[in-house]
Length: 169
Ligand SMILES: [Zn+2]
Image 1: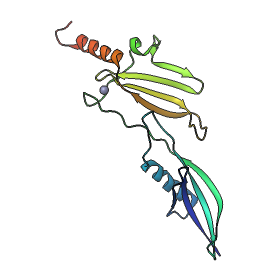
Image 2 (image 1 turned 90 degrees about the vertical axis):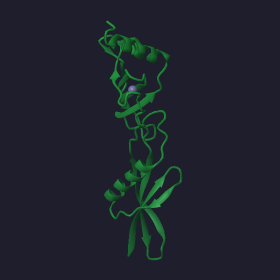
Image 3 (image 1 turned 45 degrees about the horizontal axis):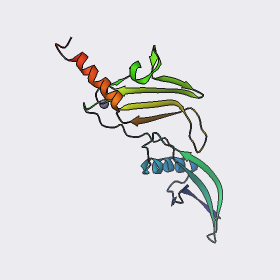
Image 4 (image 1 turned 30 degrees about the horizontal axis):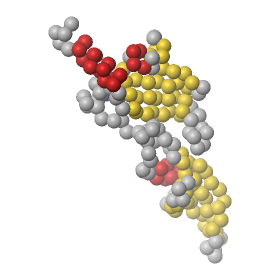
């Protein structure tokens, strides 16, 4: 008789024995562990990966890896706070460029990059509909990144306020 157990292994060397008794459960459990991890999303969405390894343990306690699956999850960066509580995402041509009728949208090989900027605080958002997981090579993933406001966006925000101000027109 031999027993099967499932292990979670990260590239960092971190290993945990999973509670799961089937591979499907083990994959779900591993995704949960990945989501709970502390990943650096300062440059945008990341796709950390781990292996779920099926380990056979015989009567004498010898362990043999019999199968493994790669597990990956998508971790988006938290949305930065806004001076007005919630961002007002807009796509002004003067800031973002691109096509006049579709500012801030840029096609690339696998999808589109969509940039916009908050009319309250000037923070930039960049979404990529065709991002690629650098580890697994998987294409067509959605990613998001935020960039700090700069002089250009803050000037635009300031000018928008003037336009909107009551009695200012
Ligand atoms: Zn904002």
